[in-house]
Image (cartoon, rainbow, N blue to C red):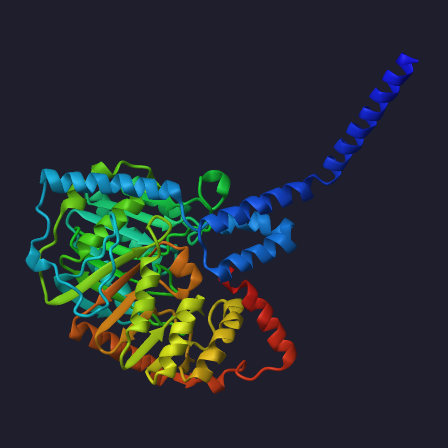
Length: 499
């Protein structure tokens, strides 16, 4: 009898375990997806994301886990502890150089200015502390032909170092001549470094890398696309565009090295965009940002570039310029904070030029409030951008802004890729950041703030030329939609924070 009871008990336990194992195997992917979804949501809460971004990702992960979970691991990351640690180590090196005074002295007080308004950046610890510098030369490169020509000129004139960081580098009519000249200069002994984003220049730079390496130049890819290749999310892209020559002259803005953005002669399909040539003390900030990104991507010690980090470019002009970097390696979101501050402290008129417009709730409501108080607010966008889903998503915001009194203008001739904010003829912001949540909260970006009247006038003139070729909001085909189209637009809006 005891043998029967023992056998029956073991049989029951065995059957239960068999059923449990069968259930786990049959539903393994569902269980794994559920566990991963919980872990991801907990991580997003810990990252203190804005509510719209949190809701968008949670919606996709919970209701479509087989799609949402892998998408999050590919594109959902926001801040990187590993990157922050590397940048802190770089800051230690910088601080030690200043203390030891082993190279060039730090800029004297006469070269440092305070932003001539309440728009001065708040405290920002570490490498990217924002400081307006006096004594710079500023020159607007108003189109792709001017930028391309200046690239070639500066590469030819560089005596000892060329550092270029770009999101996209194409081996085309724009990229090939630049790369050929870089290779030539590298053979002549110039220190040539090219940093490209692994996603932006995906499958485009193999031949370029070989050419530069054979000539003695160096090339690095920022953040491999596949998560298994790195400890961070593939979502963290380096969107900065910086070219520095001899540690003292720089080209920066929103243009990539690609015929869509620049080239030797005009084309009908070239994006409307601009860059700026800067020379003087403000370039020191760009040097530090480039070295920091290069050290991470090329896996080199920042101490090898002590000379660059400690160098203080001399004064050459009368422009006051401030550099603010933003990204997963920076505490908080300083570029977003400055944009919100510009809107909230506008007293008379504000103009935003951007290719993509998907603001967060704080920025969105700030624009509505300013419009309600009678300020003249203008937003200039491409009539049709190169990302159709982003165009659909933007109309949820544009309709409400238009109703609040914001003037919405659409640039018609071609794709508008310029990025610019003008406030009260008093301050201008240009750089690599779009007015969308990816640029302001996820990407590695850079903003250049100009406080000198002549600089602002040049940027204002460029903007007014764009506006002459623009039409009002009512001319848009989506200005007045039927119910079905609005339902589709509302659905896209739910996912907008992920775009």
